[in-house]
Length: 251
Image (cartoon, rainbow, N blue to C red):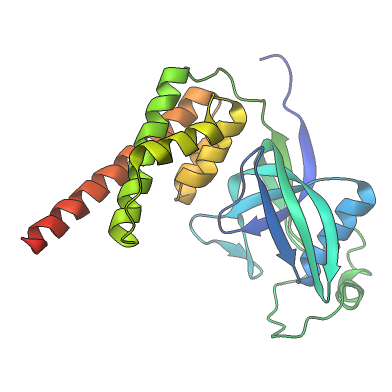
């Protein structure tokens, strides 16, 4: 590998689950640190890093530290609603955190009434003119995924997923769905295979931070496919076990 990876400094938006490339999510912001972050992104026409919280729950000066892998994200359709900022987050390139740059002030519980961004900036600006209310990080931009998934393999995953939806619906919502109907809905949404459908499936199927981080860290589409298969098979095995217990109890 002759070329060096691109390293950039970005604001970090740390939320429990994070986001995937090509996915979008409506978000609401009311904390001063994230209002400052969005102002900076709009002003500089730049992106922020949307990232899951550190798996071990580590923090620095009261701020939750990020996990290792995240997604460069654009804030679109920004609107003010009272003291809230509403926007749509669009996930783009993936990154790996190289170095975390702490926020200028320690975390503080403001209760229900938040001070303004300006009031908080006053507290640090003289000592730390480059400081920010939010955590930043130097991040290494990851290259696009290598390879594609074979269509037959992709259909296999969609079939297992359809079975899972039908079973969960029957067990937990007492609603009987048709397997073929659910499968045809999934097929219309996710087939034929594309990188978009792969990330969208990750968003829907991967529950744990570990699995979601592993997907973001992957270099090939097949690595992600293996994760999705493992996740679906594991959940389906659990559902079969629950089903057999329920059937034994009802005998």
